[in-house]
Image (cartoon, rainbow, N blue to C red; front, side):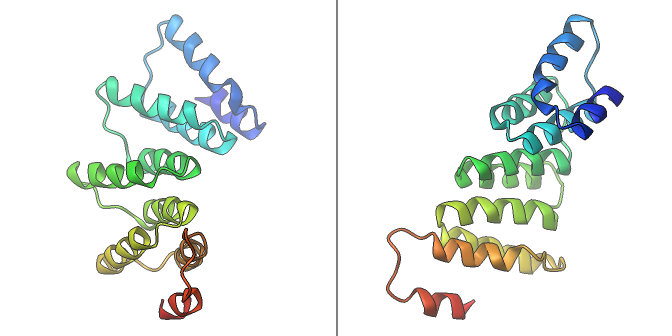
Length: 164
């Protein structure tokens, strides 16, 4: 884990998958902390396929991902413009008995914003408001981004922005 922290600090996250393969060959059993570093490093480096790989690996080993692990996976999906799978992950979080936090909600909101999914963004904001969590500073700008990225762009775009 110390090696992974150093790789992340030195922005060498592209080596995560190689290091993981070496650890497995050496008989090291991955734990939650290791996967946390691998997921965060992969997202940070923009290695989205690696993020998905590590998330699936973690689950295949019978480990229950933490809220932070789910947030990393959702961020990777947002970067891939896959809000459908991001919403599926939030349902997995709830099914596992965890409560989504503001960071997870803003990660999913980013997925909606990237593809202009205004209905999804509005549903998400309503759900977020029902949780009673304090408003994350990124939520409203991301909602505006969803309005801006709608295709085709509605004639009343300005009215939609002011309505929120």
